[in-house]
Figure (cartoon, each protein chain N blue to C red):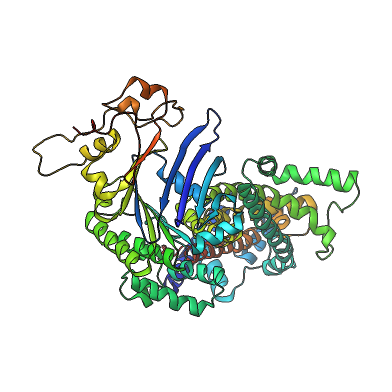
Length: 307
Length: 322
């Protein structure tokens, strides 16, 4: 197992390097420039600025210098648009916000989804099951950018219970709507996956053996059925994580949380090369790490998996 | 008093179309330390009958009649009482040992939980007991094997593990539901030996459900032959094999391939097994019976008891097998 983890980490390094280089190439090829304002800058000024950021150097030299600075100095360079701030500063400011409600959404999606799925499976074909399935299907077809305005309309404008945006250092009322908007569709998917895999496991031969051993229902559900039923859910956590990251871009903009997604979109519009790169690398690395965790969890649950 | 006395047991499944009558008034008994063979084709209700006895029937089944275990009617017990009975008095092993163990838990956890849960043993105490049981079923190196997962065992070894697990609380009855069907022939013989030893050592009564007459001949004391959810014939193993008195039994015996007969084709029972969705007024075997009489279609044969034998057939016993 230790060998497997080491190997996966070693493989992750070239993956992330490739991610850096490819993102850089795409950025380089994209038309437009961070310094293209409504009024074009004088040629001499533009040349000066480009020289300052090293944008006049040959392409391979730029790539090399960029990767070198990240790997050796852990420096993503200065932002090209926010003149007085470095990329690292911006990330340090925006990322904790996104991480806070992203993590909460993840917890909510998984815990509510799993409980809903298990209850539906145990009470198959009862009104509770139909309710859970109905709610899941309804929630699954509502993407976050539809969910967010509906929530704001209802709870902010109509009922006036919760703020429709802002962050205030992550106070609870400001967290609730973003978390619901972001987690709902994933919660629904997880509930549906849990329900169907739980139903499958409950019909397995070994559950019948456990019943024949005279163990009560609570015990065979929790001790024998839950773990195998979680396997499909765990493999869905990888896509869930990526979905939460991309979803957070919408949430950050809609709720003005000051999270990293807002900066990401602005950076893309303004061609703020170094900021786009910084955020891309950060989320890319997180994705790689998270998938590794998922694989480890898989091997931990199923003893037949040996890497 | 018999150890187990089944009286007029009926199991009916409610379905979206018509009800399925899986077991139609079965009666038989089991003595202490006896091995009883329950024989019949697929769909004759053998398994459903035993599941219903210990409350393992599915939710859409309706069970009636009596299943007296040491005088207590199992069908009257609540779920908790049945769980205790299943854990400590009437244990079961199943057809397919490859899928009957939980692949995600160690053998030790799956075995010990019965003892810790039902007998309040400490884990360490329970594990010692499990090692002893694995020794009894002749699993070599039991101490280390106990820590393994099911996938690290072969099919025969898994069936041994399941037998050990069933015997942990020293049950009075072991229901073996086609225990050797999924195993290859040499392993079958070992499991049969093991079951016989267990009866010797612990005095456990065994209900052996099977469609393999060879298996029944080698190890049972008495046989119940079932068809269409009804008892066709029952008696001591010897008497059933030497002088079958029911057309279905003779047909079953003829279907056993024999080396001393020079024939290229296997003999089969004509027609299809009974469709249990149809309710039969008369004898369920009538459509396939070579002796059938007009009355077989109209009335259900009465149960005759004579010389320790039970049979349900309209045809004169002296005509059968001649």
